[in-house]
Picture: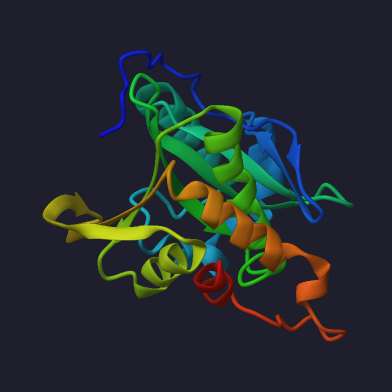
Length: 225
């Protein structure tokens, strides 16, 4: 058992200006960032992006700004805008939520990636940068991922990124007129060095061929470490 007698509360997460090779994270500023995010996340053409998220979809930039401001003020969400490193174009967002700095625990949630960001190296790099901020910059002990148990894509993503499945909270929420059973995943600080090393090896340009195909998957790299 870890000796935590000298434990001290950590800062609340928020990685303003964190950058990798492909993406940059900026703390969201509402309503300003709603205008940049809405074209890639809002409107009826993007409604499916919000299927398993308990807010949204958004009908206009003002609605996006209003809801996200409310989440910041009432729930303490610290939303990151994910931008293309070269152009600065908004590609999506993700939030630090269920922040418990006294315990060194936070959750990454409300992950909404534009279609241009989905299933790309930039998407993986964004999740790496958010996790690195939590563990390396702030010294947190626990990083959570939760999703609707029916959201198989999200569960696969959590496991691919190195989160460990912890179980399902049955009848956890009423969401958009339906029951939500919630699947819980986490990374803890003792696991982070291996998860981090795998992220960095996978993101290395040498892991991709001339056509951009990965040479080794994240899971293969973690298994070899």
